[in-house]
Picture 1 (cartoon, rainbow, N blue to C red):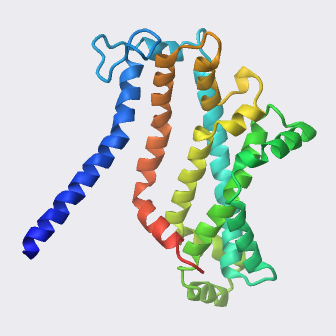
Picture 2 (spheres, rainbow, N blue to C red; picture 1 turned 120 degrees about the vertical axis):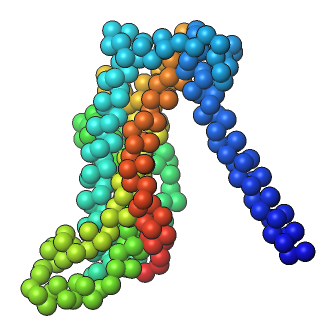
Picture 3 (cartoon, rainbow, N blue to C red; picture 1 turned 60 degrees about the vertical axis):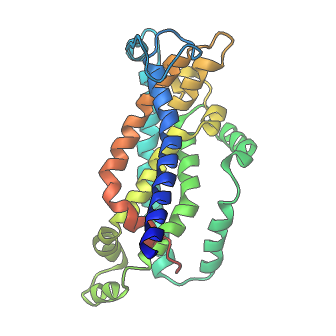
Length: 279
């Protein structure tokens, strides 16, 4: 009887997994199939095109017909700078909250959590006004600053939880040997925090790829567009019906994200689970 119950449970588990796999895989197959379909409309597209073509990919890489490569470069630049700045600022902030005791420490952490309850688009008017006032409207620097600032609260809380799991006795031993706070941070704590650094790096790298609203509000000229805004322009205009080219562009977006994910995958489980520890 027990064996039959285990078999039933295992079967149900496989059914749920297969269902979720189908739900996730189906739209991906559609977007990949549409990118190889001839023509511009999705109405005659199919998951497995009968007359597959690479014409849409060639058009994207043709600088005379498309600014796709420029949009790709803009997005990669913003992603990489945002990732580096975010990791540096979050690391210093999380280390301070984890290792030092100061007035307002608990309230500061609580404020970080509360800030995450307010979505970025709720502050669009303020962000636009501030960018216009500082002369940063239609610049990549404005996006980098917004993305970096937005990444600090939640990621700080996540990294702080991970750093709390690193024994403080290591800090005390190093301090007895004459090491200062920065040396302890750089040579002892950070090497042990690689899993959570990998998690935060991926999160902050993906954000500019997936964000559309902030980039659409702050960027005005086509040569400054990110991929999300640029691809939207292919299908949003009065004569914008290049859905298959849009699909090809969307497929190519997955390449750097996939490379980043696969290269850091070994750190994710330990980084996320330990980062959820309360301190």
